[in-house]
Amino acid sequence: MTDIQERLATGKGKFTPRYPELGTGPVSYEDSISPEAFEAEREAIFERTWLYVGRSERIARPGSYFTRELPGGLASIVVARAVDGSVQAFHNVCAHRGNKVVWQEHPSEESSGTCRQFQCKYHGWRYGLDGQVVHITNQQEFFDLDPSLLRMPKVHAEEFAGFVFVNLADDPVPLRTHLGDRILELEAYPFDRMTQRYGFSTRINGNWKLAIDSVCEWYHPAYVHARFIDKDIAKAEKKVPPVDSYHYELFPPHMLTSVPGPPPLPPREPGTAGPPVRDQKWVYRLFRAGLFGPDDVPDLGEPPGFLNAGEIAYWGNDQFWLFPNLSVQIWQRGYYITYAYWPESVDSHVYEIDLYFVPPSNAAERLAQELVVDSTVEFAMQDVNTIEATHSALKTRRQRQFHLSDQELLIRAFHTYVRQAVEAHQAVAAPPGGDR
Amino acid sequence: MSTAVLPAAFAELEPWVADWAKPTRAERYAMRLSKAFPELIAFYDAVAPHAEAAVEHLNRGDLPSLDDGDTRLLQLLYSFILVSYAVNIFDQPKIPDSGSAFFDCVVEPTV
Image 1 (spheres, each protein chain N blue to C red):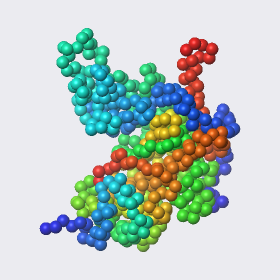
Image 2: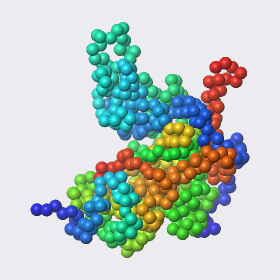
Image 3: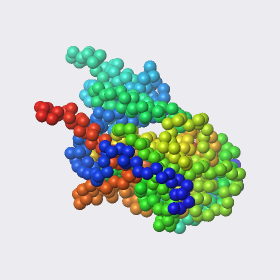
């Protein structure tokens, strides 16, 4: 074993046998390429599960709002802060003739702002911050209209730890019931201190689940990201942490994986970065940051006890997978990243990455954050190019199943949870032996 | 009276301002992709010897309200970080095997 592998090895053995209900056999990937599976997931999961749409800071004050165009035509919604402080969401459709009410410049683009009422650009109907109609122009010209029954159709919205979720079902379970005790612990984390945001978005020609598969295992880094680990890529395999240094935990339908990471560099005097060289380690030393975050970690007080539940010796981050399509990644070095995956069709999805830092107090902190952002995005681009390659090959159906190692436990679990959600919904919608 | 392009101590970097002192990440990334690899190395080698002094200089300023010269210097450092991956890791402007993969930056800090 190399030095890093000796230091981090735990000898704790495999994780998959802890979850015997998942088995250890090969897993069909038909769910990632079949149009029928996509339609079933959309109906069973995306139309009736809590979906993360943005941070509460985006609607900090009464009257502040943002719109979301949920990909694949899932929904077009407005999310607003009402006068009573509650979060409100409604479909962005006028009760008069169905025009999109809230948009700027281009109707297909998302927008945000602050207002007292929303006014439809078509015939001037006005709506309150709860989506209820408050004024109908030339109302006397209509026939038997009851304004109290007219509104932009309501969407259930709830906040948790500053994350705004919506649910498109008529009568969903409460958000906190969906999240469950283990995820509710995240409320102790000071997300609200980290308001310096960088947001990225891209469209990927591959199934959304393949994208999640690509980043919830620690088998790929030595290959996909080899150049980052060592310019001599043959050496990269020897320099990644050993397989038993990671942590995996399932609390269905949600999941956690934790990773080790290098401890921050010790403080140094200005002017001691050394003579310039063409070596990224020198750049990391210069700006005091790297893929695992800034070396100068903001003081956030005592870390909440829920972090690093696997007691990793050199803990790097926790990645909480909130079913169905959100990862909240909390880093030891005092920042967090959200990853959201929005299916558009069986073979495309929109991928959103948002990084949040404590606002920097000087240029050095700002530059360290810039480097973390750049590193994260360069890594992410390496991950996404693989998804398109995987999807296009899977579609040939010349291989029929995945062979999953212990390192790929979360993939095994995730596809199972998706399948179970679809089956549960179909059982309710069409009970066996019953008429629809 | 003329406004200095960069703070006096960093006048040597002025030839790089036109291409690399860009206010948005999208512009900086587009510049990285538009350049031949030797041009990225030349930019890296030009900025690297001044980078640590530039950080110290900028740390004396008030981050949200830097003057124009300091803002340009900071933007050169943003570009330097972005170019460092090409020079030190990828040996080419683009990430190898990245195909058509690219991220649009939808939100970034104003400074």
